[in-house]
Length: 297
Image 1 (cartoon, rainbow, N blue to C red):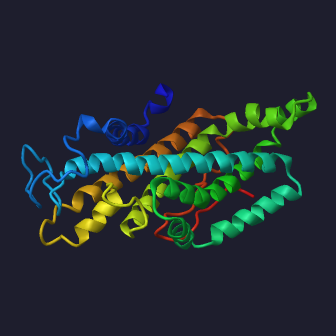
Image 2 (cartoon, rainbow, N blue to C red):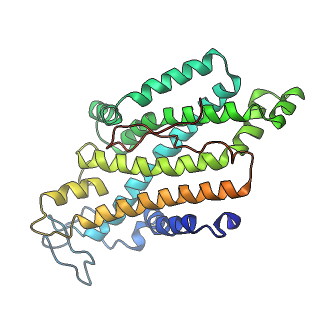
Image 3 (spheres, one colour):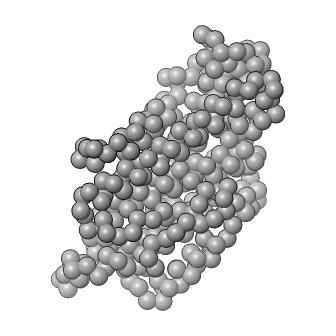
C-alpha cells in the first residue's frame, strides 16, 4: 500500500475523502448527538452550538441524520458492489478460462442485461418486492453483476494465453487452481479499479432510488430521501438540501479518485495485468440508463 501511495496524489486524496465517512458509518455515535428519528427541537432551527447544522422540517437534528445516513448509503454501495463483484468475477473467470459454448452464452446473456435500461430494471425490482436496504442491495447486485461477468471474462481470455498459465496447465493444474493462483492475482489491479468505480455508481443509484421514494423508507435517513425532503422546503431553509448533496458528491468523488489512483499504481507496477484494458465492470450511473465499455470479448 505504501508503494501505491508514493507519488500518487489521486489515491491519497481519495482515501482522505472517504476515511471520515467510513469511520462515522462504522461508529456514528462519535459525532451524532441524537437519534436520527428523534424530534429534538422546533423545525428549521438555525445552526448553533447544540445543533451544528440546524434542524429539519420536523425538528430532527440534521447532522445526526447525515451521520446515520452515511451508514445506510455506504452499506448499500459497498454491499451491492462486493456482492456483484463476487458473483460476476466467479462466473466470468470460470467461463472465460474454460471457453466454448458456455463462454459465448454468458456473453450473450450479459449483453442482453447490460442493454436493458438500468433505471427500469431497478425500479421494477424494488417496486415489486418493496423498499428496504437489503432489497436495494439485491436489486443493485443484479444490476451490476453482469458487467463484472463480462469484464472478468475478457480478463480471463487475455490471461489464459500467457506462458505461466500454459506451463501450469501442462504440469497438470486443475482449472480452479489456475484461476485461483494465476488469473485472480494478475487481475487484482484492474479488478480493484472496477470495484471502486462501481461503488461510486452504486452510491448514485441508491441515492436516486431514495429520492424517488423507492429507497430506504422514512423515517430512517438516507442522503437521497433527505434531498427529497429538502426539495419541498427550499424556501424555509435553503441550506437543508446542500448537506446531503455535498455528502453524495464527496463520497462518489472519493471512490473515483481511488479508482484512478489504483489504475496509476497498476500501470507503474509493471505487473502482468497492466497491459490489459482497464474498464469499468459496472453499468453507467442509474440516472443515465446507459452502459459502459467492457473488456475485450
